[in-house]
Structure formats: C-alpha cells, structure tokens
Image (cartoon, rainbow, N blue to C red):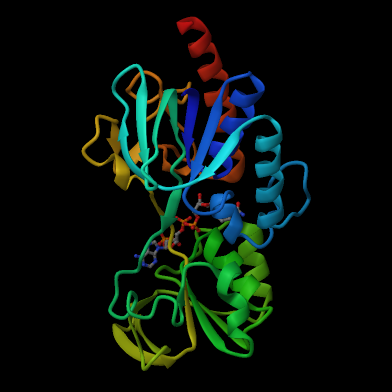
Length: 304
Ligand code: NAP
C-alpha cells in the first residue's frame, strides 16, 4: 500500500498536518518514536494556545492526538531507520523494519534540549540532571535545585519547581532574561534566587548530583554550590540527525522551507521546530501544519 502522506513526528506540527490531510481524504500515516505531543508533554501549563486560557501540555497533546485519529489519520509508534525521499514515491524504513511508501513525506522532526556540555552532565543525567521539569520536578520535594538558562522555558521551569523544591536558583549567563516580561515579573516576585552573569562549569556528586561549580563572570571567581538537582533549559537543537547526508537543504541543522512548507525536494514538506524560522511556538507549529496540509492536498490533486 502506498500512503498519500507519511508524517514523521507526532508533535503539534505533525498532528495538525495530519488533521488537514486526513480531513482532505488523503491516506495519512503519522510515525512517532515516543509519545505524541512532542515538547507539549514537558510543559506543565500552557497559557498562550488560543481557545484555552490555560491547559496542561498533556491534555492538549491528548486532545490533538484524538482529533488527528478521529479525522482518519493512523498513528504508528516506531522510529525511523532510513529515508529515501528523492523519487516520486518516497520510501521510509522504520526501526521495526517496516518498508513504507508515500507520495508525500512531511518532516515534523521537532527539537531536543541543548546540552550544557560541562563535566558531569552526561554522567548525572537521570541522577539529578534533568531536561524536563514537568517530568522530574516532583522527585525534588524539599530539595535544592538550580535551573540553568534565561529563556521562557527556564523561567517556567523555575516557577513550576517552586511547587516542590525548598530552594530554587536560576543561573543565567547574562544580566537580563531573554524570556517574555510576564514570566520575568513572576520570577522576580517569587522567592526564586537569581544568579546573573553566572555559568555552570561542572556538575559533581557521588551516585547522584551533590554540587555544581558556578563561575561568576563579573568577578571571574568560581564557587561550589551544594545542590540536589540541575534543570538544564538552555534552548533546543533540531532533531534532524536522520537527514545528515541527505539532499534536503538545511541551514545550521534546520530544514529550509518556503511559504508552502515545501523543502527543496518535490513532495517533501517540513513543519514545526525543526524548520528554519524565527518564532518557534505551539501556535506557529500548528500553523505550519495547516499550511503544509493545505498545499499537500493541492499538490496531490494536481498530480492525480
Ligand atoms: P531560548 O529562548 O533559546 O533561551 C535559551 C536560554 O538559555 C537563553 O537565556 C540563553 O542565554 C541560554 N543559553 C543558551 N545556551 C547556553 C549555554 N551554552 N550555557 C548557558 N546558557 C545558555 O530557549 P527556550 O527558553 O527553551 O525557548 C525555546 C523557544 O520556545 C523560544 O522560541 C521560546 O519563546 C519558546 N517557548 C515559549 C514558551 C511560551 O510561549 N510560554 C515557553 C517555552 C518556550 P542568552 O539569553 O544569553 O542567549
């Protein structure tokens, strides 16, 4: 069987594409290697998705997944082993060795947390170092934690961690936050301690995290701080490893698309955080999906 559309990635961009293509009567398969919802799943509360004043990431993920399925899309939980995208019929081989074919492929690959790249980070990941406050925050009841970063994610994580931890510090490399003002205000009004102009240079411990080394950039002095958990929230990198060496045009690891969400290869589209764009939000990923879905329907109608 040849699918009309195979969508690789079940975050909001991929699922929205699926809603559009399935509703257009196109045979649509979404392949997701983990759980559908992508980065939504690691967001405790979403306050900027239109239609909901506030909704949990998990609830929104579930709702959109159900919507894609009830529109007629099939979701398959599998990884991608290889992609052959150049010919008219695209070929996808999955980790379970399924060989699939489609007339169009949508790359909805998303992004993953950027690593700090300091000593101890890898060693203590899962043993005090975390990239997901919503997933791991409750393990730190009554403990002391540090959040590294100064963007929206870091500040949201710090505010969330205040529910559990007895002491939360934000460690940010500059003297002002990158986040939106409302979050910065909430943080400043809270009991969160802020260490500006500071960099974590190492993570230490025994079986789990016990200490971090923090460089005060102004005084050029380094100090050890005892800590139970380190939440790294320093942005993302696109999950486009699978495209390395492929003919897909990329910019700094991000997939280059035009305003129809087409890549440089006919029949291959890309949406969401892995694309080369300025604003990476749930709403913009959903919008990418709508645009891609619309143009895929037109493209396949023209080809029939
Ligand atoms: P981000 O906006 O890229 O911020 C990353 C933060 O980490 C910045 O403060 C940056 O410092 C710092 N940083 C980067 N590399 C570092 C390193 N090697 N060492 C130490 N610090 C480092 O990332 P994000 O907060 O994850 O957000 C990603 C995207 O999702 C953004 O577009 C954001 O708006 C969006 N988002 C939106 C919401 C929301 O709307 N509520 C929530 C979460 C995320 P500098 O400031 O010095 O560059």
